Length: 133
Image (cartoon, rainbow, N blue to C red; front, side, top):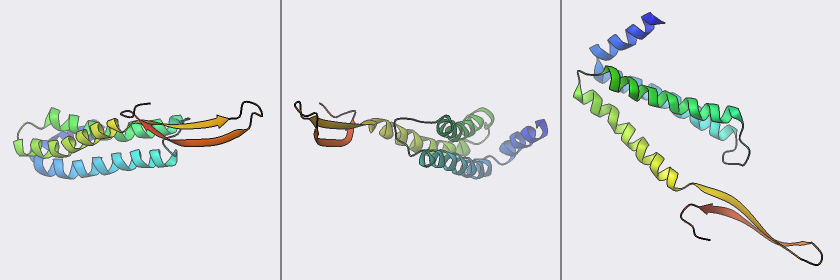
């Protein structure tokens, strides 16, 4: 494992731009694949979430974050490679911020007859953070 780690560090130092391009594509593709397949497998969003779904979401995100940590930690020679690594990180950050603003809760509202206890009408939908009651 130590030889593999040294090889990765040496590759990043010798060919920083190529490392960022190839490593970034591999890490983003792998991370997004794990993330999306975990979300789709669980029928996200729903009320009960299994540990496997959250493990996949965490692992997919972790791969991408570790790529950027590695570039920030070990890539010192090429400013172009650093900027090249920041471009997808910036878009991902903006995507996450916009996605966080879209967080909502699925609701179901039903009218019940007080005399018979019969359900008259039901409505369901999403209530987002910015919606007022």
